[in-house]
Amino acid sequence: MKTSRQKVLDIFNRKNTDDKAFWTGHPNDATIPIFAREWGIEPTREAIYNFLDDDCRWIVADSGYKHPEGLPAFDPAYGVDRESLSAAGCFAEAEDVKDIEKYPWPNPDYCDFTEVYQEIDRHQDKAIFTGMWSPFFHLIADFFGMENYFIRMYENPKVIEAATERIVDFYVAANDKFFAGLGDRGDTMFFGNDFGTQLDLFISPDNFRRFVLPSFKRLIEVGKKHNKKIMLHSCGSIYRIIPDLIDAGVDVLHPIQAQARGMSAEELAQYKNDLAFVGGIDAQNFIVNATPEEVGEEVRRVRDILGPNIVISPSHEEILPNVPPANTLAMARAAKED
Image 1 (cartoon, rainbow, N blue to C red):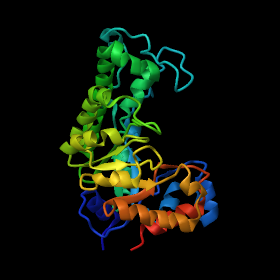
Image 2: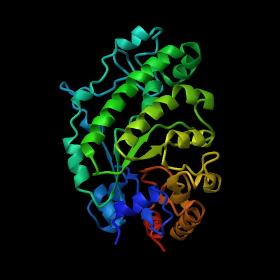
Image 3: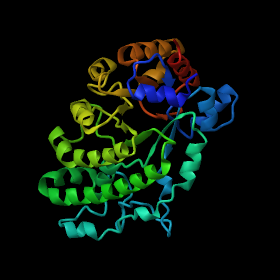
């Protein structure tokens, strides 16, 4: 009998088997006690995963960065007063590449992944999604301020490119170190940047190809070097760049935000020969308001359209407290139906 790990790897390799797999995602801290009370289990994510017969474990490697003074790898508020995600960061006034070099860039030598490996070793029968999260697109937006970041692509592209390169330099080196030590204990490099809104990309496809895709390819090359499947997380409407992602080496698309423009199962089915999928069950409205019977029907519908190479999962990994436990259970059970 196949392990969960073997089933998911066959799905990611697009072997067109009859294997059925499910990933709960990441129940929010406030969701855990609700599910635990409903099902009479321990109030932990692992207890939820075991109850739902979850095939996957998401173990992020970022905690392996151990600065000797306890500093984070990146601090967009370095030297400035930044109280919200929309506020300008420390590069907001940068006009020259020399301004970028003044930042205390993180040192991959400070990475110690011992504890991450230990957690991965506890789940060797599961599909492990891992690696540094590497959200360079978000970080650049934080360092400059989002609107300023987009404007600077036109007004001062060299500064944007220099800052992006320095951030990605760290993630390339850290991921290379991590996967070299991981060996064959995990099969999937999973990292994420949200490139889309509900309606479209944050930036034009041309700007994506100039300012984002080259860095994206650098990270993918690390995963391929270590023989990992590449699983990309991006919320929102990204349908206009899916061919670029495929050409860059993406193997698996997550989370398939079903209500975003161009991201329905029917619209994504054209890529079944090029991608495996994780997600597809709308978590914005559907599994919040549907009945368990309707959830089961939707799982079967999405699997019929995008399968067989799909891991059924919500359209966003963060399971909020407004999702009824009965609907999550119905999704998990329907995902494993023959």
